Length: 120
Image (cartoon, rainbow, N blue to C red; front, side, top):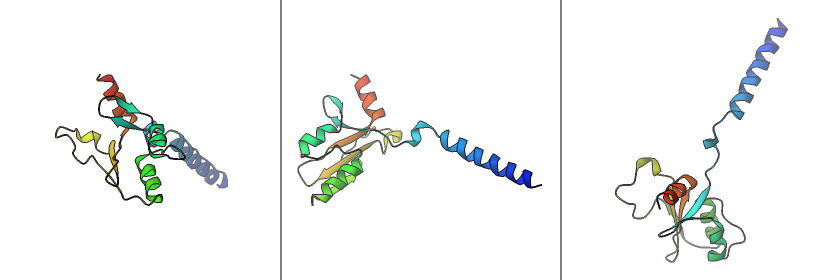
């Protein structure tokens, strides 16, 4: 009977292992880009030069935190003036980070950036 308990535990562990490694790629955090009004997506490295950062942020939240650490007032959220026809599946894939009154970069996921580039 002990071997049955061990077999059940091993089967359970195997199931958990397979579940963890079979997660879809979408479970990974998204790759973010900056969007420019007229020329599509840009690598976040642009912010390093623009804002004199020590490293490129990996997300809108990371950038917001970097700015807060500098003592800046930061508001992070959806676009201040989103287009009326924005599809619901895009919500959360476009994020604006308002830094004081001078800068408000718009972050987009790789999917949005790719769609914009293809639409040119």
